[in-house]
Length: 250
Ligand SMILES: Cc1cc2nc3c(=O)[nH]c(=O)nc-3n(C[C@H](O)[C@H](O)[C@H](O)COP(=O)(O)O)c2cc1C
Image (cartoon, rainbow, N blue to C red; front, top):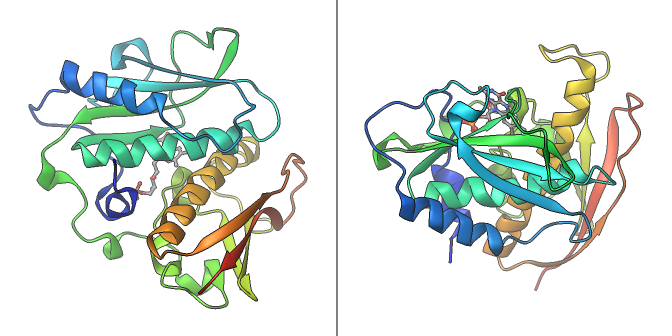
């Protein structure tokens, strides 16, 4: 079984893949077997995951393959893909397969079994020593910008979750051992992404963040009841509640 927690420290985005190592047939079989056991956030949303050669996509980052995610486009399908994809991202790191969530990429096939293309992760086997050595040196918002209330030994880890353009669109408030997780959008702030793209990718980012948050809670032996909230409006609101975790702390 993959120790997801350890991989949070090791994973990183390979913006350009280099080196001679090759992803083997065995690697691909292991990824496909892993995909069959993934736990979705929303089991009622249909998804398909397919591995194709990088040359069958618009990705030119020196990867060998791209993992394509397709989904029914209903409800919180973007959040669901983030949650699913982050399990794969962490699994890949455990096998020394480098990965890159690649939002701007497009595949040849926009449909798979009637489902729509959502996003891809580019991959290539990389040497162990090219993975992250000191996560705490990675660029992230300061802790106080993304977390308020008791930190529970997890706040300073979850903040290293990956996000599109490193936007880190999350905010956690811990009040009375309930974690409220918000999608955060700084009012009026214009980054390099157009607003419709920000809304799209930041919903995937929240799914990634929820998986990393749950991994940290599990590592600390903290059990929880999770309640998910709909985040379907495109109105530019600063804080949108996405999930609450009611913790049982012994
Ligand atoms: C949903 C999503 C989409 C992304 N799209 C791209 C992309 O199109 N191009 C790229 O170079 N990096 C992309 N990234 C990688 C981010 O830039 C990277 O995760 C972030 O800067 C944090 O760095 P780290 O992953 O090395 O910790 C994406 C990441 C996520 C989560």
